[in-house]
Image (cartoon, rainbow over all chains, first blue to last red; front, top):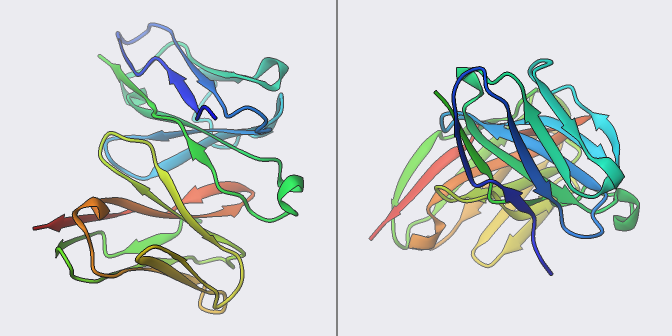
Length: 119
Length: 107
């Protein structure tokens, strides 16, 4: 079974440009999460999709960030326009539907991340 | 709301033991533990769901004390492969990772 994949693995852009990150979750996983780790600090939650719906986007830093998950499969995270402080590693994770795990908390499977550098 | 971990960093020699603590200011209903090696994705280690419950994963185990709102991760007879940053995590609506503990095992 393929794991969570992310594209690109690295992206270097100039301030003011636009970048789109992609995440393909594990097949059958309804939950999809985006996280960001900046400068080796803690991993911060950005948002959570359940299928194509945004369950929680309270972690999105501002309206320069737009996430979509059309059709409930892969997801994209667009940053427009990018700022210097957006640099970091963006991780995507997926997990099963809570109902399939008897309502209990569930492990998340992480992708390899996209390292974004804004210069 | 972010769980706080201690210590922030620890260096061990192979074969030594370590304990990583995770504390929350809010009630904990479940605790996740993940390990992230440098330049790689976080990898799930275990989930604890009940108070006082201990789960194990090879020579890594954990406990969860709901009353104290704490969880501890125990690494026994550490191996070089244990090096990395360990994160606890929990859900308060969204998922919150802890502050992280950098663990380095040296020969």
